[in-house]
Length: 269
Image (tube, helix red, strand yellow):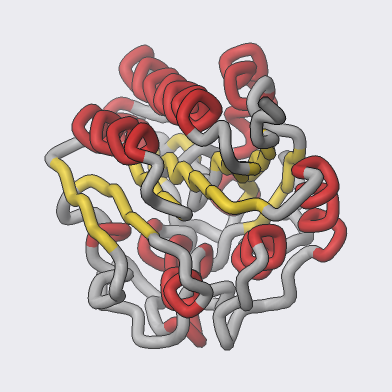
């Protein structure tokens, strides 16, 4: 992999906002009009439910090398967006950009730190748009810290399995317009054992399976809505000489990610 993707992760936030009919955060980069238009056309009407699944550290090169492994993601989405993570390519910096649409120097997180972001965010925009919103994440993770203090519902759980079960429960309740779900097992394991160790690949498969379960639950339970489903990682990974995995460098392996977005149409029954 030699080239860095041309489109910044900062453009995702405005794209999602446009697709679901809310105003983008005030400092967000312009959305991708063509991508939002594709999603809206596929929906055939207003998109009134959104599930954004955020698996940590799923690099673009993993998809290319292990494409059959990602079939559950490809089967449930229609649009692939190759994006470039901001620098430094670490979790709080990248998620800071993902949900504000702003670069690190604007949203304020420029290192591996987890302060509450003070600028306007997608969560704020959702509240202004009258969207009932939930954030489900692993406790003490970046996503469980940097977007606190908004008038949304927070569910912070011990680890990925509990996050998955809570998200499945919330989808089944059919009360939220927008649910953000964060898991981290692959990132945790690859730092210890390497990016392609058997343990890391099992963790990656678990995150793919989690997305499939959540997407299928949304299709079952949100039949009265056109729903946007997203598989949206924060950054990539690379292998170190010591056998451990890492990220944070200005290299394609760490910067290049692919976001998969799909729409499920409401039932006509």
